[in-house]
Image (cartoon, rainbow, N blue to C red; front, side, top):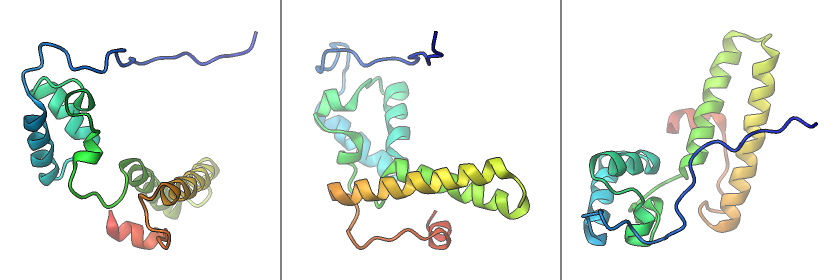
Length: 142
């Protein structure tokens, strides 16, 4: 029998309507998202805050739009930022530990994933076509 990975984690409910116990309306939720975005929170952190503090389980069900679409300005997509942070950490580690082959492989894999993400975001229009990734400039950015 082949080794298989399990499907862990929760799944979203089938209904796209907000639950009846949600007290915040669409306009209130949009105002909360913009307020939290001005404070510097990422879209995933905003979702956690709205869920835990305000009782809004799904922003898209309440407003009809994703949190990242409601935010006024966002330079880079959140998943790309997280991958760049990981690449910077791996680079710093490899500067100290030059013979760490596992981390070198992880660095190469992360670099490849970033290139794939950049190509995808250029294709869908979230990044400009002339945008280039440079590790030194990324360290200054993040």
